[in-house]
Length: 254
Image 1 (spheres, one colour):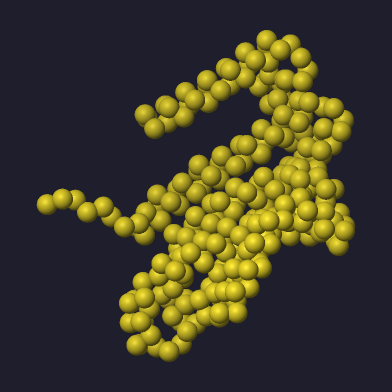
Image 2 (cartoon, rainbow, N blue to C red; image 1 turned 90 degrees about the horizontal axis):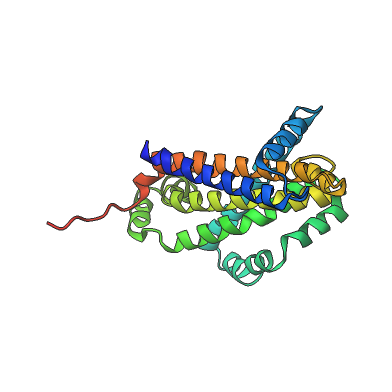
């Protein structure tokens, strides 16, 4: 109960502060929590309201998955190829890190137009560096003795990769997934604003252009709720249930 009481208290304090500020401002530019929730409910219950949420969730998951596959493949390749390591170190990773995500979104709009491909690829490009750098660093920390022992039983590099190397990278992959997924939800907004005619980001831009401030706050609240559900719900559950066993236990003094 104590674990639930403190977060609940923090939420109540946040809502109370928000309500007081809205009441003090007496301005349509700062709707109170009730007005925000009502506006969000009206948008979600409107025709195709929940469809926009589903479309955005689909794009975030698919874009993150594509970025994860690309990042993992490039990260693993650095162990087996000097050329791949040089390419990742000198070109690929610096390029992905240096170019602002909004630039990729604009480029993809020029290439693919207002299509699902634009936000999905924008998310993939934003998520890939998290997986790339985590796998790359994880490869440096692998237990060489364990890999050498596995090599004495089989010379199949694919089997060693799947049975020995990737399981040792699970903590790094989990950290990358958590960071990449959170970033994807932040990137999907400008990606849908510039490169889509559907989704939560698109609806947010429509509300902004129509000067419906309560709707802007409502869609922003929807993004926050979804991120909290996944970050503090799903990822925390996976961390406690499955990932803690990979962490080195602390040695107690005798």
